[in-house]
Image (cartoon, rainbow, N blue to C red; front, side, top):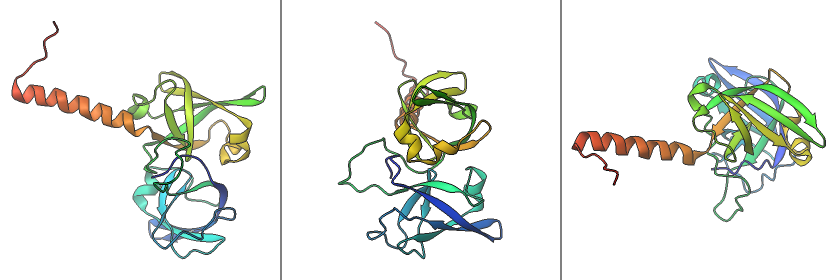
Length: 209
């Protein structure tokens, strides 16, 4: 689990092809690796990856064909947001993030408004139902609050601190981003569907008095 609070910006320095999979060599200067061991999870642009062959300044991660097919930005060298897995004693500054990407969104607007920036993203239609005003969403591993939503496009206000300390500063119209919706929304939907299915199976209906 993660929080969506980015700990440092790293760099995918090398991408090695392993058939249809890839191996990433990632620079992680600024990330304290002293408590990391082989097999630990590190979120890379919001994608939970397993760290292997690491040092104080680098680690490697294997990315499967399946992960590549449902995420963006893990197939070429560029800057990436990094966060180590959450410990039970850590502060939850953002929201609970699994590192399992729900879909890839597209930036449709990125403009400055005073000291802040307005970021509009078009989400895949299948996950738009989980996005709510004042709710949380993870964009490239960053925990953010949704300001507005219209159809499949949601809007976020980015403060200078967020831009200065994440790779969101490099976004532009047409950029693709990894999206993970709030887990609570998925569980609420599942419980509602289960209750509906259970009522049908038992023949019990709810009466409004």
